[in-house]
Image (cartoon, rainbow over all chains, first blue to last red; front, side, top):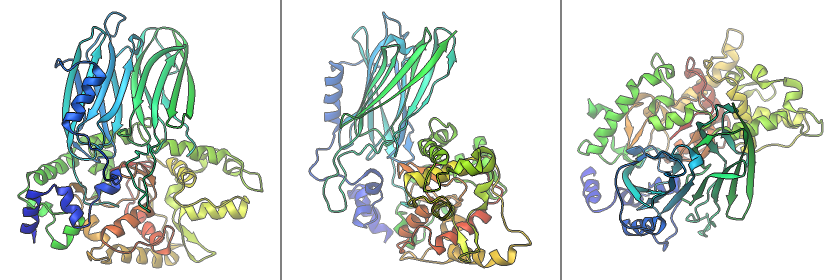
Length: 161
Length: 107
Length: 284
């Protein structure tokens, strides 16, 4: 029995296996997805980030995205984006954009900061339909754009409840 | 659910102090991706914007999408150079607004 | 060791335990579960052998519970406070009119539910008790078990006991009266049910701390309810949790407020004695 299932697992996503068994819990957690709806892809997420930040050349560093490596539940995943910036009138973070590459849609949130923010750090909680990359970019007042991404694993709990 | 937000913001600060502000508002953040029991699509209904304004000047604005969890939590920082009033505005898809103000004294 | 930690019963596969020892992810989770159990932060959430559900959560989820401004249950508590102070019904009184400040009058009250109801000669849960009080004594309208208003009111009342230990209400005077209900609750807990033929005890006593897929099985403690569940994206009552658990083992759930669930809640309360109240807790 378990061998059969492992074989199945090799060919299908785990979630699909669960669905086959009629035991999917993710659907209940994050809402069943309407069929035919376009799903985000790494490509669509990259395009979105490029559109929002007005560039496709990114610098690394200066930006950190804090998220759990394994989400306790995909419905509510805490995150904090921190950007290294003096936040003065002459040098500050203008915007922080977030995107996800395997959610139903790529868009997550955009934060528009000002020198009055004092510190370039924002926190929120997001939904992750499955294991995927979350991408964050910071658009600086000098026009440079810093990018970071993180892989967050979303697991399927045994207990729906 | 009465949509009453919760805000953590100190009542008094030192001039020029940078403080963290935490906000939380109850809202379902209906994604528009879910189906009801009859198989019909449940229309999207979310809070799509959160604004924080201090003495009339914007500090932070957030554009939210359905990927933000229910009961959206949003924390950020602000440098407070003078006494005044923080105004927070949450706007939903139907144009509904929830507004709250908090006074801060800078010493 | 890990073998013992991971349930391997075929029947339990229905719970989602498909991956066995060969899967690295499962082993990583087993390590994670042990790491959580040793976290010094959990010190106040363990009493002897008893562990609060808090202990089984990731640090991010515990962070959410620990800060009243990050804890998503609090907007409901706020609403409960409003209801507490609002005049309702034909009598025109608020809860506060008779009970004064909840911070004094409701402290420790969480321990006294479910309580024995002389009128029906059954145990009564706090929701049913409040409704009867609101209808009979205040001339108000019934609030639904899982409604935001009822949830908020119960959370607000139970919040007043936060940090105090769960205490058993059984004493020499009432032991004879309460014993049958306690026995019924215990029987429910130990009774196999559903297509998976599992009892509450199997997961929440015999295998507490083990993994059901990526979930660490808790000891099934009631001290944080109504609790904000990340999965529900709102708070829920312990009867909602019972119902979900029953559905998981493919059993037909009982109704919220049913005799069965009220007795079970009563049994769990006695079983949790010593742990501290955490309402509103945050769980996965």
